[in-house]
Image (cartoon, one colour):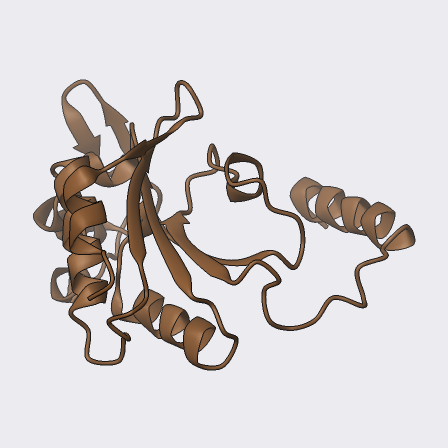
Length: 192
């Protein structure tokens, strides 16, 4: 067993020994959902004041409004009653450090973990790689504010998203812990 697996199972054993949340209902008690990044420095429960059962939190690389993220938001509303949604990106995001072409090139060389330094990304693995990386839009980020606006608009304009749901746009500052409003995203996400 790996060290990480052992640590996770041990932590879960301690958590389960005092678990008292089995009574929580399926719908989120506070009636909202958050789409945010998978970055380990972000803890939506802490920065949004959540407890188990309060809200839905969907996380992916960059907190982007991918088809799957929108699928989750639509289910969250249609079947579980959320009435407000937050799109929260963050400063110092890894999705700003590469492009679709860089990712495709790295994957084309090998599937091993790459490294980065002042001169850019380097593949240190041994092949084979895969050409399939060039067929994916990695939803990289060039500008945080613009990406939040794009994602709010992508959600707002989706045919399965009700126009009455407010969609809020923020950037989480990893240095201060503050949520910073993106005014253009807030305007774009206003209920119609």
